[in-house]
Structures are given as C-alpha cells and as structure tokens.
Length: 639
Image (cartoon, rainbow, N blue to C red; front, side):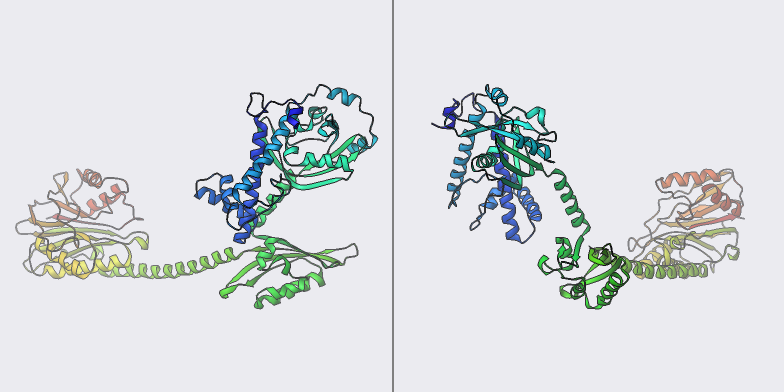
C-alpha cells in the first residue's frame, strides 16, 4: 500500500487532488535546475564566468523567441554534454540517463513520487496533532539549542505511520527570531505540519535529511544551496544554509537565508565589473595571497598566477614602468605610507592596459607591516578617450588658427577691394550714398560688394551684389565678380547682356553662386536701365512714396549657364531716389523675406530725398543682425 493509500488520498486528477502550489513548486525547482545546468554548460563551452554565461543564455532565448527555461533545456541537450544536478536540488535519477527520453521519463517518475508524498501529507488527518504536542515531554536539549541559536531555529517532532515510519514533522517550538521564506514566524508555524507549511522540504530532499538525522543521530549540514518552496501557489527561492541535530524528542533545525549576503555580493560584483575595480591582499606573515577575479583580469593573469609578494608585481607590469613600482614599494615598506601610482600592463600587439593602483600597508600594534592591501582600476578606456580628446583638441586648435588667418585675410581683402563710402566717385547727374557694414564676427564676413563706373559715353554704371558663403572663399569670389563686372562694363553693353556675361564668368571661374543688380543711368535722358540676377528688387522713392520696382528677377549668378537676362527700363524724375541693398538688411530667421521688403518700403515712406539720410534711416529702422551677415546699401538721387 502506498503512502497515498494509507492516508486515504484521492487519486490524481480527482477534484480533491492537492492544490496548485505543489505543481507551481515543481515547475520552479525544475526550471531553476535546468537554468543552472545550462549556465554551467555554457560557461565551460564559452570559457566565460557563469554570470556572463547566464547573460548569453538570456540573449539566446531572446534571439530564438523562447522562454528562458526552454532555451536552457535546448542547451543542456547538446550532444556530448553531461551535467550533475546542482547541490540542493532533487536528483531525478539514480544512475546516468543515456538518452533524452530516458532522462525525461526518470525525471517524471521522481516527480510523480514526490507528488504522491505531498498529496498524502496534504490530506493527512491532523486532529491529533495538538494532543501529541501536549503530551510531549520536556526536552531541555531542544530548549537550550533554540535559546542559543542566533539564526532561525525550530524544534521538530516526528509524525509516524502505524508501521513507525516518519510521515511528517510537527513544529513543537520555534525561537523568537525564526522566519521562513514568506516571513512566517513562531505564531504562524507553531503546532503546524512541516510538509504542509513548507512543501519545498520534500521536493528538495531536506525532509529526507531530517529523517536521516532522526534515525542515525548524525548531524546534517547543508548549503549554501538554492532552496525553493511555495505558499498558496506562489513560489520563492533563496540561497540557504541549514543545520539539523537530533534531540531526545525529535530534531532541532537552524537555518539562515542569505538575502543580505547575496545582495551585498551582487552589489560588490557589479561595482567591480562596472568600475573595473580589483582587490588584492598579501599576508606578509602567512604568505597567503588573495586576489579578486577582476584584479587578476586587470593584470592579465590567472588567479593561480597572482604575484606571491608585492615585489613580484614588478614582473607583470610594462618594463618602462618598473621604476614606478619600485618607488611605490619603497614608500610602502620604508615610510609605511599609502601609495597611489599609475602604470601599464603590456598586452599583445604593442598595446597597453593602463591601471590606477592604490596600495596601503596594514600595521600591527607594534607598527610593523603584516599585510598589504591593493586596489586597481582599469582606466584604459579613460586614457584612450583622453588621447583622442587631446588629438581632437590639437586638430581643432590648428583649424582655429587656419580659420583665424583666413578671416584676417578676408577682412584685409574686403577693405582693399571695396572703397570707403567717402571715396566713391561722383557720377554725372547722380548724388550717391553708400553704407557697407561687415559682419561683426570675422567668421561671418560674407560676399557683399558694390561697384561704380563712369562709362565712355557719359552714362553711369552702378551695381550691388552678394556672393554665397562666408569667410575668405566668399571674399575671393566677391573680388572676382566685382572686378569681372567692371571689366565687362567697358563694352558699353546694356545691363542684361552684362549680367549674362558675368553669369558665364562666375560659372567658368568657380562653383559658386551669387546675386546682383546691375544698373545704368543716362543723365541726359534721366533713364534708368537695370537687370536683376536673383537679387532683391530695388526700391524707388518718389514724392514721399516708396515701393519695390517691378520685374521678375532672372536666375542667380552661377546657377544656370547661358542665361539671357532681361533689361528693365524706367524714366526717373529729379529728386527720385533708388535704393539697392543686400539681404542682410531685410532677412530674418523664421520670417518671410517679402515681409521684410514691405517693412523696408514702409519705413522709407514720406522720408527725405537725401540719399545719405535714406540709407541711415533704413539701417536704423531695420536694425540688421550684424552678427549674422554683412549689410550693404547703395542709394542714388537724381539731380
């Protein structure tokens, strides 16, 4: 008769079968065992620490769109791989399984046996438990053990079948500090059955260990091990250390969950890994050496090959840095003072690892060194970044010097090419006013230009333009455009023809673009003819009114080859003022250019007919952003 038959347990699958907590616990235990086995297999296969192997396992699961336990199962099924069940888990078989099917069948058999036991205890009659505890004789040994224990402790008394076999245990007493994985203490557990409150003791084999202690009188010490249990269908796990000894009336058990230790260890591991910090200690009395794994990694040695003494450290650093180590040892052992030093460790390919090291001597009561503590940090990445930043900084400084020189040349060239406003020659029939303001920042000096010339037939040529870009290239292009126009003007051709030739000249000279207004005035007939190559329209002031001159601008200079530019004509009257200007006067970031032109025309309404006062009024009213661009204005008044 099985345990389930003796306890009158319903068969599996019946409505009275045990709750889902046991199934949840079985799944949790099995899943953790699979993950632990797969992690160990991956660590051996990849040659990496188990923590890193777990990360690789997680990535594999994500890449293959699998649950972590399913991915672990695939890893553990790799051909030629065999592993043992981790300590603290239920062994599924008594002998090695040779096939996946056999391992699965044996594992299911073992779990089925555990399930039958759990079902039997979950349905067992507990009506006599209170009487059993009441009749329990005094046990001074158990009382002393519970009182003396600093960890959680419990006095368990056996519950036996009619044949004398131990069926379960009762919590006869617990100390005040007792607490299980779910935080239940003395008031929650006293008088209750072990397997009903802690089914994990059966699934993990701990229950069997208690029975063995009771029957053999040999103490039991287990862990640290991964321990899992369940309550109300919720499973929990933790590393745990467990001890059990026999007392006259049963078994006394003490246990400790390593919550804080595990948390502190994880924090320390993260600090060492993220900060690339390693720790080492040399015991100068016993000769023992303790290096952390990160310390060994920083120096590129195995834990077994760690230097046996501080002096041996000089053998694994870069030869050029050995004097630094020797000086540090002198400070440690002669002055008995802490040392901070940076040195290198030679790697393959002529590369180096940079380490920042802090070491201090530990002195006894007599002031003699008994050990040396050392902390190292891998700062190779920091030094690499610093070198890259230094190189970048030097490149920036060289570029800055080149830019400053180009800006100085641009300013000098601009001043040499463009005449001062006071030096602009008087032209027949016209009064002229010019304002040419360079950008306040030398880097923003652009290609604004203006030009005047009296032609052989007595007519006046005046023009204004703007070359795209800033700095020396724009200034050089401005000089070529201005001088080219002045040379072409000697032909006496109309402004449209001159604009077409200047366009071809700009295309032939360099890949740049620009705008221009080229105008010609005949003082005898007071006739203005003009052409626009993508430039802003001139503004005419007449009898207190101000408005842009009509006429669609043709393409800008340098954009399209062989363009025929139109020549517009306009008869002028005495005291008419024509204003030419560049975009620096009216252009604003985020604003429509047409709105700026309309605003300029509005400012000049009902203004004086003096060209100097016109350009000054335009500058004051529009307040151009000189930090962003050049601004040039050219005004003529018909005499």
